[in-house]
Length: 54
Image 1 (spheres, helix red, strand yellow):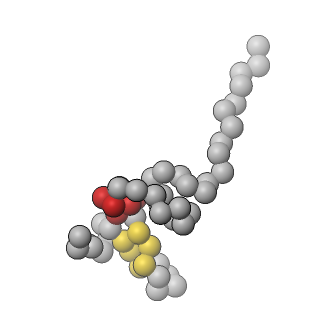
Image 2 (image 1 turned 90 degrees about the vertical axis):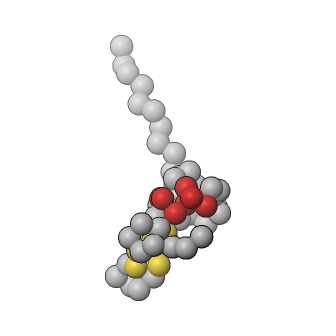
C-alpha cells in the first residue's frame, strides 16, 4: 500500500509521522498501540452514559 501525505498520515510539529483514521481503516485492524486517530478507540477511556433523573 502506498501512503499519501495528508490522507494516510501527516507530520506533526515534532517531525513525527501520525497515521490518520483513514489509514487505520484501510489497514483493517487495531495494532493496540493507543494510536491518536484509532477508529476502534483502543486505550481511550470509556464514557459513561448519563442517566436521566425522573
